[in-house]
Amino acid sequence: MMKKIYIPKDEAELAVIKSILDSADLPYYVRNEFFGSLYMGVAMGSFNSKPIFVYKENFEEAKALLSEIVKEDEFEPLEQEEDPTPLENLISYIYDFFTKKS
Image (cartoon, rainbow, N blue to C red; front, side, top):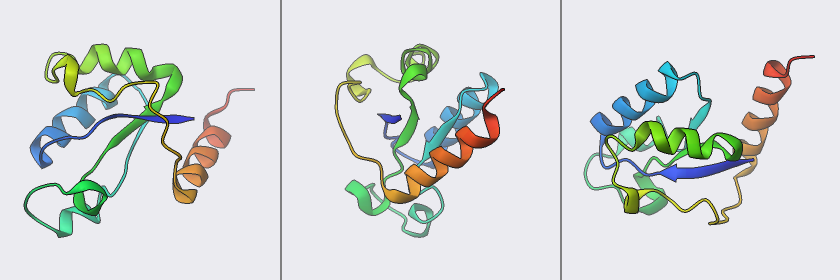
């Protein structure tokens, strides 16, 4: 299951975070990654914010990697429960299917 780790303040911060996670080969998902870009301005909740989700088992590793640019109190708490959307569930299932090693 994926957990929300952080909500970037702008596109530049999102790009840096994505590159850090990519370089560590940590899988992630950005909600509203492309739709949110259509609406410029302040990130407003689920309208145009782009929360980053990582797998629960990778949460602490991702947090450690991002701690250089994100303050401790800005991370989402691991215990916070947020149900993924049906699309996020489908993406997670497909990712797991193609990346599971037999």
